[in-house]
Amino acid sequence: MLRNTRTRARGVRFLIGLAIGGAAGGAVLAVPVYLLGRLLQPLPVWVRLTLLAAVCVLLAVADLTQRTPHVWRQVPQQLVNKLGSGSLGLAWGFDLGLLFTTQKTTSMVWVAMAALVLLQPSLAAAVLIGVSVVATMVIAAMSLTAGADDRTSPNWSRKWLRHVRRGSAVVIVAVTAVTVAQAFAQ
Image (cartoon, rainbow, N blue to C red; front, side, top):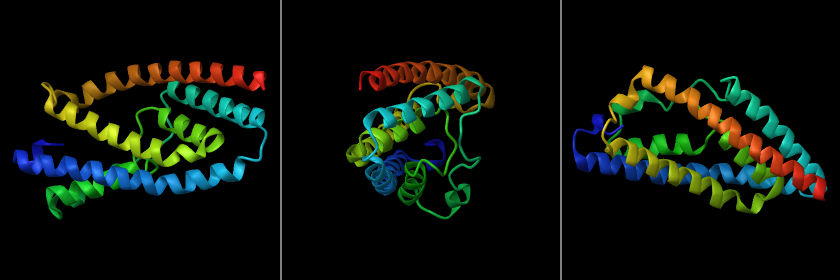
């Protein structure tokens, strides 16, 4: 992401815009997540936990079979030639912060969103803004470390993606087990 910015100052403006835009996108997404969650709060806890466990099973299977649900779309590339680096970061960050509008590596973000809706909608803004800010920090760190150009090659990405999705599935299965245990404890 930084190689097209030409200067360090532009790269910094891009990353700051990415962080601010991502936080804004996360805040916008938090509103429907919160409202949907509040709508489902009257359901008994064991029902919401069971629904979460079912969602987790489906998403773990999706990751294991390399079929993570997402749209086949990336951030708008045509903006690269139309916007300055800070504005570009802001636009792309907002798009990424909405979560629904771009490709996903794993289903973990969907598990987190389902957990927010079903169990703790009051945390939607903090979690979704936090996810976006942390993701921006990871992007910045990965862009600045050695081997950043190698990580953009399709061969590296394809191999890495399979391992990450398998790891995600294992984590989601563990979350499912804990969720089922909590449902039975109710």
